[in-house]
Image 1: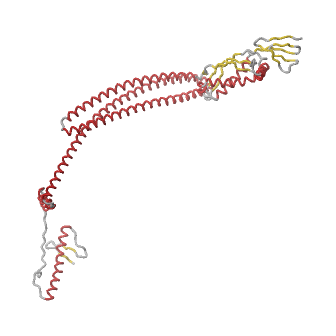
Image 2: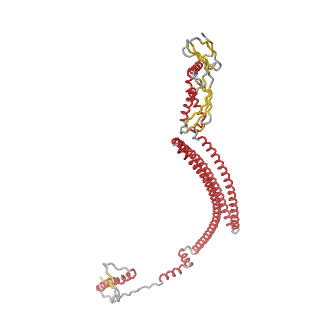
Image 3: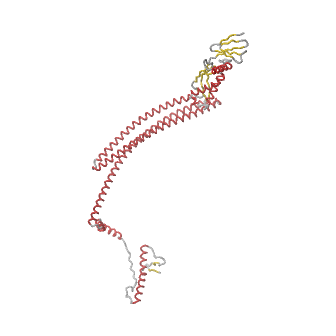
Length: 503
């Protein structure tokens, strides 16, 4: 007996049995005795899956996804090789999936297992930041790997939709990220407001300081003008030039100071920006460390659930209290630091103004002293020049006689009188000791005639030399305290008489 079977638009006929080697697929066919025919639906089925995965940092998350999966259908008008490949895939579906009811848990578990397995393997290779920022690429990679697994069942993904990543209960990573972003925006707004207020106050103080500086300069210039009017013509011209140079130097100094202050402010702002960036980076690192500690604490909590339930509430309350106190202390310290910085800036501006005024006064005093010294040097030069001309004229009048000119100048200057006074003062108070020695008679006698007279004279001269030594040595000893050498003799002191040289 034979029967004719026709499939619906979304169905196919799978025929097996007599005269068919494997499985025959058709939309309509005769079914003869010894053959079996079964209809199977080729409509895609939606599978809603919440994939539980874990990132490379061991942070769990949930990936909600909806997949529309169905068998591959033969395309009309395509190449012959493509048609054969699609028929092969449809045959695989008819053998492996069609005998099962697509609504049963077995097919759903099969598809879910493929999707979850590939998603977990891919997520384990990426960090949470890479998954969150590269959602599109992550989705494409998941679809590609899942499609490779579905090819062996003759299935294809018609459509897929991945929702936003969801935190696992007990692991609020994404909620913490949202809170951090919100807090960063609030903190940035506070910083912007504080900077605007600071710029306004600093600008007002700068304008006030400039007004006072200009007033001080005008007063100083008025005093300088009154002093200038008291000088003579040449002195006035020199002072005017000096004041112009001083004013130009002062203006250059003011410009350099303004540039330095601007550079310091820019450096301070750059420093604040870099400090804020470093603080943000460190805050992320600290938060990641805290999250890692939270994961470890959660694991420990599963083992000691009862103890953790009692202590967790206390620790949470204490942590929140400390956080609020720390925020309050940080805010108060920040305001105190800003106030101290503002006071220091005001004091520095005042000291700078005083220093400028003092420097200007000192500069004017130094210029006046310099002018006096210059005039004194000019007068000395004129006096020297006059003296030089006078000496030259005197020398010419004396006929070029240098000695006569020297004597005249010494007499005119009272040099001889001064020398006499100095010599008199030198010998004043001296008490010289005069010793009179007598060498005996015979020194003044007559000289014998002949050789006796010549021999006597020679002996008298030698005797006179030796008789001269005692008074000479005695005088040297009294004046200097030095005695004669030992080989010559020694001086013997006699209180009653004179010293005598003993050989």
